Amino acid sequence: MVLGTKQALTTPALEQLTRRQQYEIAELLTGDIVTHSLYVTAGPASTAVYGDSGNIPFFYHEPMTGESISRIFGASRGQTFTLRHPHSGMTVNVNPGRYGAQLLRLINGQRSFGEIFALFHADWHGKAAAPDDATLFADFAPVYETLNALERLLLKHPDCERTVG
Image (cartoon, rainbow, N blue to C red; front, side):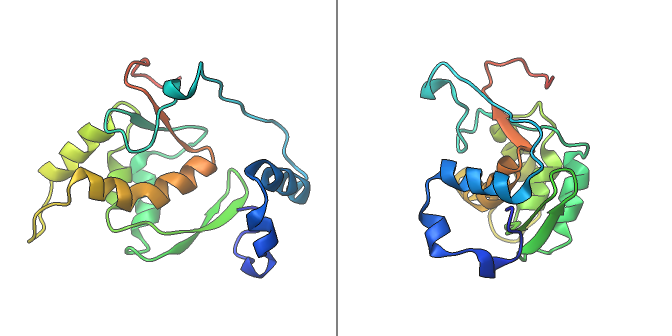
């Protein structure tokens, strides 16, 4: 993400480095990381994992809403586009998926993925049957992974308070 759309700078050698080494290089390249965020859990079982319909997606460090972000992703009409994120300074190509914009619109920090998918299904107007939850998770994964890497879309377990602080 730090290299942005300058794919010529991405080499197989960089891709072979550990995630930590990649982060170290990114920090040196940007030279402007002022804070480091850290999320600690009691163990792997305490982490909200993407793909669990009970987990609740929410926007973090983001002044935009699901509605406004959905317009940005929807403008690409399902085609990969370059997301220039002004608040993080990152530029990245992202595949919005077929349903990404519609799902982003339904994220409000209170609804679980199961509730979001139920709303999506209730509003389905396609000629074919609506996609199942597994298909929606797979389609939305690139959107989630990109926004999560920017620390803008996070997950919380349903046992947490249903408000975002």
